[in-house]
Length: 187
Figure 1 (spheres, rainbow, N blue to C red):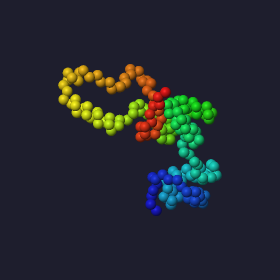
Figure 2 (cartoon, rainbow, N blue to C red):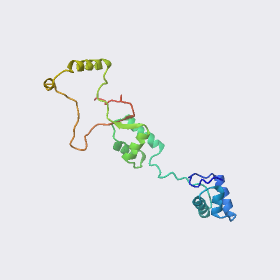
Figure 3 (tube, helix red, strand yellow):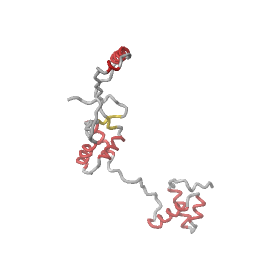
Figure 4 (cartoon, rainbow, N blue to C red):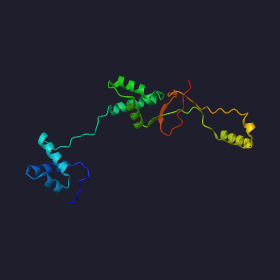
């Protein structure tokens, strides 16, 4: 039989029963491991589990339990879709009040990402039409031979933001990836 001792795999219940049966017959862990082509440590752990608990059933262990249920996840995504400007901390507070279980803003962000929503800057302007593009191209062609002194009389307003503090107070909205049509509502 091929030696695949390094491969991690889950043993079927029938195979576990066969292994326990052979060990109860008095066979050694090493000989059973060689016969089934399974690592010695796995057979030893299975035997130890059977001796302490009386069963060889595989325990379910998926890691740390989730803080939210699938219903909570749907509620979080629904909250963000209803009010796209709401920050993750506010959604976490609303969800905590609704469920009675505290969750963090980081959990909210992960659940929103799982639901396909990402925090993005909203589109603040109307997209250019083909007519706008033609007029801009025409303007460029008319002014491409200007000299430096002529360009010096032009005031450029590019709307760039600069902030000396770490928090720029920039508004973000939750939206699906690749959907720029979500624009900022003007009140």
